[in-house]
Length: 256
Image (cartoon, rainbow, N blue to C red; front, side):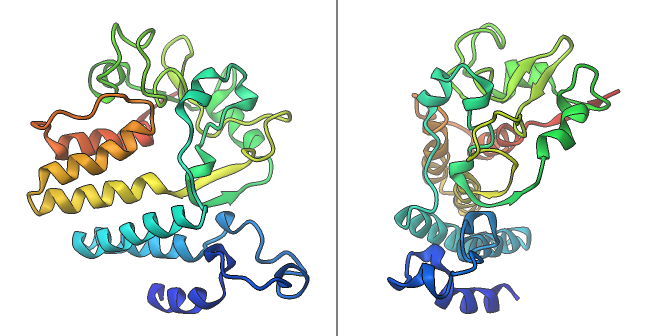
């Protein structure tokens, strides 16, 4: 199904940047082909192919597809890296790109998403609050932070972005929104992001014993999360990859 989808979408999906001058007044006169990153577009299907091959332990084919997504999606301005400095400088919750929407290859547009999740994860008395284990964050998950979570926050997935102290834990603001939240970021549920493609490439290098190349792939993501220092050459890439997966979607514990 995925291979058939790639063949069919490859000829018509405007996400590839190959459209006629009269595209908007003819083929897309009803808007069906607009906002392709909130649909299962050509690159999202290719990224899904990478996932399927990875789940089947064919890391080589997964990495090939992931590499194609990286090259083509960036080249056609489908994705771009979030700006760490912009995230750090922004003080208003309503102006932060909490889900890194510019990195979404495929996302869902969910009407009134914030209203649906607020009382569950972010309310004053959340029914089931999502918290991150503090020892993971301060000791393992964000090892570059010094003195816990209150200082030295280079990694924008730490206190600068996703984790806000809420009395007994750190809430994940990934699905934040409000009536005044910036429209471009509102109601976005990420399904596939460009960072995942780098993780797949790293996993393939690990499987081949190419640790230096695996570390290089991980550093591509890390430097776009505000981490200035490259990983040491003797880093265990498999352990670092697991940290990256968890850091991208913080591991929660359910608390009633």
